Length: 207
Image (cartoon, rainbow, N blue to C red; front, side, top):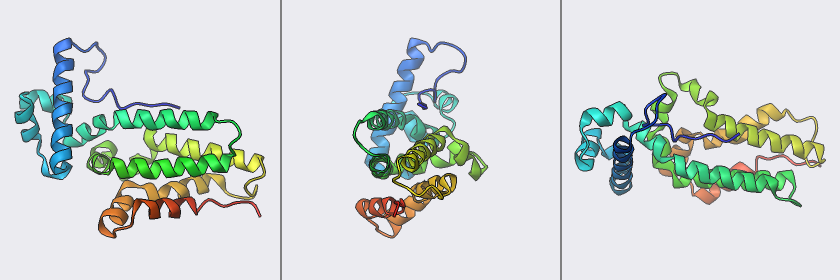
């Protein structure tokens, strides 16, 4: 399953005009520059509108909250991660648990590289219901990938067939929840490498 965030900031149900597409690109380029320079939390929507030269009404119609800008800016790195993962899953001669190890390591790296955007875009993505994150395509894609590799590992005899794979898939992804990751990395000072080792060490092996 491949999914995209490219629809954010685009008109629904009709083709985007060239001037509207240009405004969208300018808004996103401006937001990216400001976010990278000062961090998501320190940048206001008014500043993005002023710097981009786009009216506030236009900005808010396309992106009601700067969290939606964060989500739109995540589209390209998300597509890259999905492409890497598809190549990994097709790789011959690599066991399911080896692929799972690589996938989890890449998820940790993706979270680290895009932490400010993930953290800034987390709230509006989920809305008022914090549980909605677990039905979002981003989580569903991660979960289905992990679960598929776990099931293959059982069939190949790498993992115990008595494992609760549904629960294990969720447990392996729990440390990558953006709030927990942000706390461990930014507040507790855990390195990306340490978090990756810890997550991958949770994968059980047969025998």
